[in-house]
Image 1 (cartoon, helix red, strand yellow):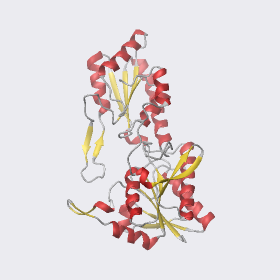
Image 2 (spheres, one colour):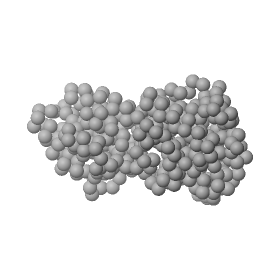
Image 3 (cartoon, helix red, strand yellow):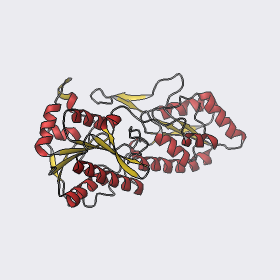
Length: 358
């Protein structure tokens, strides 16, 4: 019987994390009479026993807040835990012992990295339920959207709306670089919603010749400006990813960034048209979640606690259509979900004239 459940948030922050925590706590207490505790700062908090009680008082007023009241980190993998300079050990058994000391089950609110750790811990017998979180919308949870995504691409869409007027006024090409890692969901959705003329995705290697054709088409129509949305993981047919830096101690050591500047400089060189670049960066992660993300996060939090109460461990909650259903953690651990290049949304974008540089 579950008497106490622990919660942690791992990986990058996303709007809606606090809404999930709030929903878990309220459901646990009101529906099941279960206590809730939180581990602060992800798996670091587990290893260092950074524990905080979570009652309805602690979660009061946090629904519209961005970030996470528990803190987060994308380091401190217990299976590859740093114990010295350049020295790592498998501390997963210690991690499991600590969690079992404080709770009967653990809810991990995280992305592919955190949920992959959760899968490995579940394989060793720990009671785990996952709650999918990423602004990139790239988790392998069927067709379900992850909370945080709606807020991120809504912000990118607003940025395009603002850039449209200045691009048109100065007759410029403006390049907007957005996040997404190796998946182009933010770029695709915001590009369509924000009226971009060209969208460059990791899933579709581009050529500058094809981009120029689109720009020339617009010039011939007396359209003297253009908007280009580029996902941080986009690359040319011949090129490599543009990498900002490497963080050797991170589970994802490659830090993408800089493709927007590369594209803007090359387009200005090839066309003679003045180009400017805007990089949204971590602005996409911050701020208050949209109403859609607040509702989705709340539903995920309730569903996660329901799975714990039902003893359906080793699962991740996911929304299929209008129904919530569990997906095995093993599915999430297999890899990321990329943009479907044969999907209706991308076909729709091409039919209205958006170029993908292919």
